[in-house]
Each structure stands twice: as C-alpha cells, then as structure tokens.
Length: 292
Image (cartoon, rainbow, N blue to C red; front, side):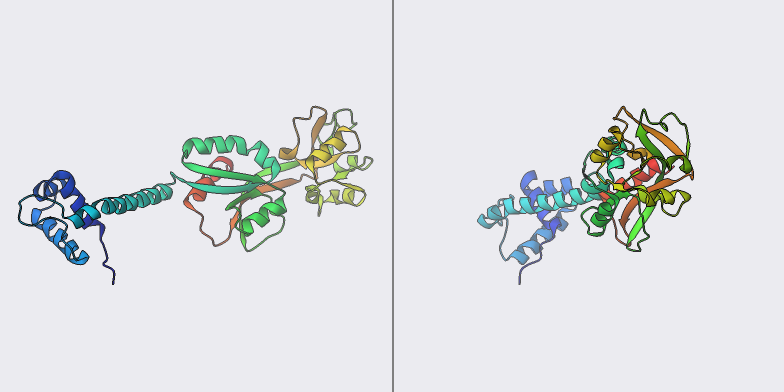
C-alpha cells in the first residue's frame, strides 16, 4: 500500500535543507523544533528510509534524501500552482468564456462591451461566435458556448433567458424611396411596395402588420444579399434598429410606429446549470452594462 504524503512535512524537509538545519527551519516556519522533528520522523517512517543522516549534529541528507529533494520540490510547487490557479479562477482573474451572439449584437455592441470587460478582467480569455438566433440557441443547448445573446422566439424550459434590451423595428429602404423622408410609418403605408422578408420578419406575426407577410414573394436570410437587394431598389424590408446596416450610405431606417414592434434581446444560458467563474463574471458584467 502506497504511503499518503502530506504537504506540510514536505515543506518542513525543504525548509530544513534551505535554512541549513532544524533549528533555523523552526524559526523560519514559526514552529517548535520538536514539532518539526516529529513530523520529519513520521515522514521517514512512512517512506521507510531516513532523509537526514543521524548523529552528526547537522542536517545532512542521506542518499535517499538527495533523491527525494527535487521530487518534494516538484510536488510542493505543483500543489501551489494548482491552488493558485484555482483561486485565480474563482476570483475571476483567469479562465475562458465562450459566447455566441446574433450578428447585429456581435458587430454593434460586443466590440465596446468586450473591450471594457477585458480591461476589468485581463486574465480571462474570450471566444465570440455569431449566428442567427436559432443557431445561438442550439449552441447554448449543446454546450458549445456557455452564454448566448439573442432573441428567444419560443419559450424553452431548458434555457434561461434574461432580458437585456429592447430593439425597435423599423422600415429600411433606399434613400430615393418615397418612404425614405418619413419620420415614422404606419404599416398601411407599406402595402403598395414590395416587401423583402428576412429572418426577423417574424416579429410582424400576430400584429396588424402581419398582413404584409402574406403578400411578400421574396425572402432573404443573408444580410449581405439583403442589403444588396435594398441598394438595388428591389423593395423594402423591416429590421430591428441594431440590425440596420448603417455603413450603407444609400439606405435609410424609418421607425415603424403603428404598430410599434420590438425585438427583445437577452442573455441565454442553460437552465439549472452552473456557469464557470469566467462566464459568471461575463454574465454579471453584461447585466450591469445593458440591463438598465
């Protein structure tokens, strides 16, 4: 049966070696010399060999003691590294957090948010992926990421959703479109124009504006293709404000005020699952920054 080695006697042995004797080690460790001698004796009995030569009045290592010394140092150092790393992680000084977000959030909000987070937690690594809302939900459910920032279209008992912000819906069209100069729109005014549906068009469902969806013959889920169609004047679309591609100078965003519709964006995680300390830090940070 292998002997169980405790760390304290190993530290005593190393202190005796480093300080040059039992008395000096006891003084440095703030322990009594008999206590240290007894702990070393017990360790020698467990190992079955003496570590120090007997009877010469000095702390001279035996050949077995010389063999043990570097291994004791390695074992103590490894223990201390593990403890230090574990403590750093629980204090949210180290670790890694994997996040997924819908593209509008990933491109518009996350750069500033992550810069602030990294300034506060420089030891935590971050992986950010983007995808449509269903993909973000799937990644959280499968454990590919710990946190998602997205819209939750359907209630799901396996997911926990904490609302962060509201994103109002508007009409996007080219700058020379008849609607482009309006400051607010009623859904009736959209009826004469071709509507290009996209992945967020479901926000119109269940509202008076749902009638617009039944007359649409074009659906585009890819944002690059959608903006190309809008710039070409093929039609108009509805988008949450955060998803509006501001970098396209020819496009305009006009709020839809009747009915007023919004996208609820929130923090998604698996229900009844604990987060890692790094993810806990990120979760708390996002709530502080966005959930006003």
